[in-house]
Length: 455
Image (cartoon, rainbow, N blue to C red; front, side, top):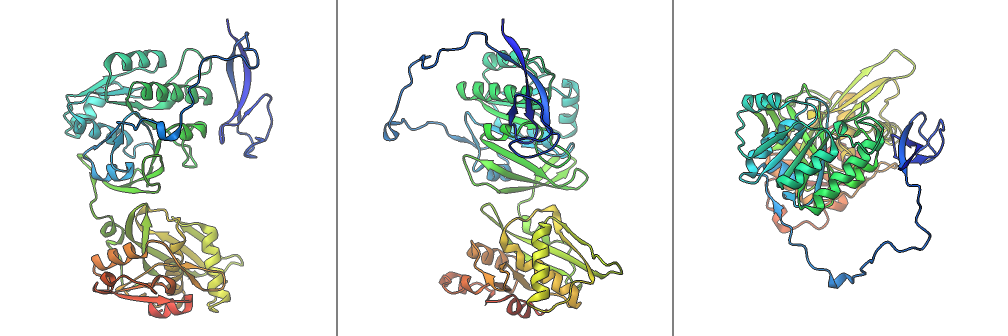
């Protein structure tokens, strides 16, 4: 019989400690070590004792895989996945409660017919799932439901049914009888996920795992969970908003940071074929503090509205609040505006928001943020027919950005007449870009770019 021992595992990074400490030795987080019980074998293998024969293979002698991508029929989801579902792969889907994770899984099942889809629910009864499918007008004769949370029974059903796709809803409810800890603990999540992923790869099954998230927005459970799967999809936005954004945080079979945009209707999640129109719809062109950014998300060019509100403050410490954009980068942009362009910001509250709930991380968003803030400070609207994109240096210069061609084509496609870019991106333009009905303005400094935008 195996012995049990206590281990303390960090809920933030997954580091294992033999004794309790207030601070994790790996990620330096306080109060994240949780006690778990693990089994240890009494008999230890002798050092150097072989357990089997390991085959060493040359790279060029490897047999090419015959696995092919399976199109889901949902264009936005296929884009985020990198072209479709990969056989024998594991996909982790996370997001806020009620944002549409289970709805997307239900909509996926009938599109894979006649292949068998196995839906393992640990949170809802079959009647509840059937009622939701009826409400969404989903008819899936190839979908089979199993209300089960025991790992060993789930593995037996997967081996017997041999489905194409297995949906686990959710991994926090699954537990194994081999471990004494309750479901949802770090040990159970890590070991159950590892066992399911191993079974999926051995039996050539596509595994989709739904995971809860913490109040900080990160996937609940050990960080190792994200490393074990092949793809991590994250729902962005709030559950009360109509639009949903799915972002590929990790993808071994495609590009990362790819996004798919959906609209939640009575019949479930509906694809948004042109996300740029969604992100810039309803904008006011006559109000100061608005600018349009030509952004790149994964392999897709998007036009996004950046909003800034500047108001005079009577307090000694003005507010700096940013939604969808890094607050520290916004502080740097404010410092550049004040020191290089002599635009006073110290006595003003500054609020920046990215419309549509999108989160911008690329450096090319700097110029649009600066243009929106400068427009609000000087009470002068930005040219409504202009789009901008560029990285700002600490000296006030504009640095080159990537994928300028796709940004230009997207702006021209949506009818904008001018795009402002760093000068380095306009030196060697393709002849096809010069034929587009849009003026391409290259600027060396932030001052020149603001003049091009009529600020």
